[in-house]
Image 1: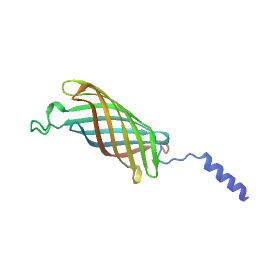
Image 2: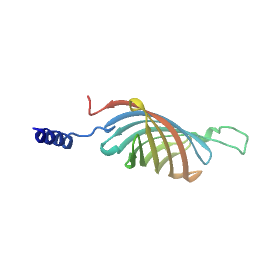
Image 3: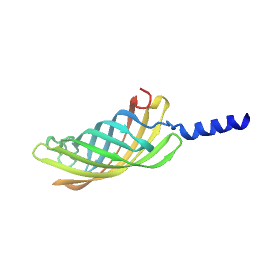
Image 4: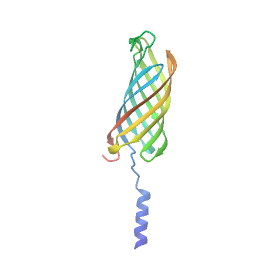
Amino acid sequence: MRRILTLIIALTACVTAALAQNNWDRIGVGAGVGYSPRADAVLFWEHETKYHNAWEVFLAGSLGLDNRNGNLWKDNTKAWGAGAAWKPCVVRSRNNCGSLRLAAVLGAAPREFSASLGAGYQHSWVLRGGWQLYWQGGVALTLPKRGDLFGVSTGFGVKMPVRDRMRR
């Protein structure tokens, strides 16, 4: 009898899927800074797939800092964009996950259209109830050249769980 129960428990453990924070949808907000001097803000929706890989759709805005003329924010350095990112998980441990972040963005500044490709790293820490804090950094190649061809930025934010797709 003990062997049969042990076999049933072992088979159940092998067949049952582990649901450790996979397949969540999240809404998030973040803020950051970049070079050439600017402040960034982002609002996004993230869909997590298997093995903590994720897709992200986002809206981003940026304000440039002008030190030369004494103006805090110049009007012509405002920019906005909408894009998507693929985030394959590369580092996992208990209650945190690190992902590469590969993004494409279409946007505009006051006088021109822009498109950019970005690559970076995002690290998320899981809190109670599925909430997450994250930090990210990366580099973006922007065309046509808008001041700098390459932009470097870093930021932080919070992700709020919306729905767990496995438990409907």
